[in-house]
Picture 1 (tube, rainbow, N blue to C red):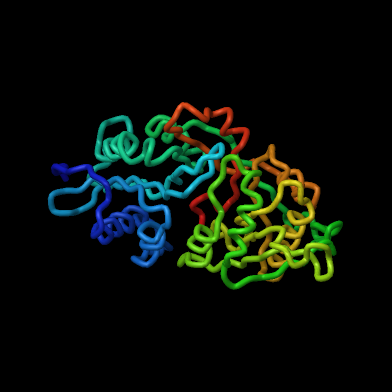
Picture 2: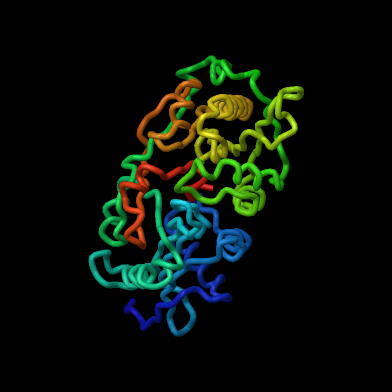
Length: 346
């Protein structure tokens, strides 16, 4: 089929149905077990996102969307300043317009338009993604991605390898209370405010963001926990020490993922208790493995190893496109805080 003329422009309200038609057509192609994305899921990802939308489209005169390039924005703390960063998601082009990535087809034109308009400063300070190693060369060539962590390291525990589940975090088992919560409340604002200075480069993990990300997500149900001082302990009535989120079936595998964590970098006990709880839930739900991500140079990574986790390279690379000269790539590599929850594997 010959290509028709098209216009490249940012998303407008009312484009949703055409975007979903493209998404389900592209990602469902040849996939027997594909589950079509719903309008509810799309609205959660994009129109309900508290940081707004970053979507560039190629649209035919008829209104058919034939290329889509999007990042999920988030308020981000960067060297003491609050900016917007974007997580790359849902890059796609209609099969009628697949001319190869070396040619200036609809997809490449849409990508270039994104980074020359809405994907640059001041609307977006940093664009990033977690391509697998196979997709990395395309991201480097077409997007201009710069690898920051190549690869991302996975902290893990296999039940067939380490059968003593109670060993995880055993040394800190009685140091604090782990309390499950149904919904994220204002105490998360207090927790983030208390600890944000420890995270020079990180998504702002305040209550507004966390409610959107975990309470309202229509893709999965999450277990959410606070770690509090034990009753009777000094400061027991104060704000919680830490917060974490976990769920089974990550990446459609029998993996219990520790998805997110907020707490002090020197609080080894809270890290251990988060992993201890995640391990218990994994065994109870019939999972085979526990996984978590923290930057390898961070205290959280070292605390996890001390609590009984192992580490190995993942299939993913964390890459970035910076829209300003400062901070530079070396600073980003030194200060970036991320977890599995910062990826698009809901």
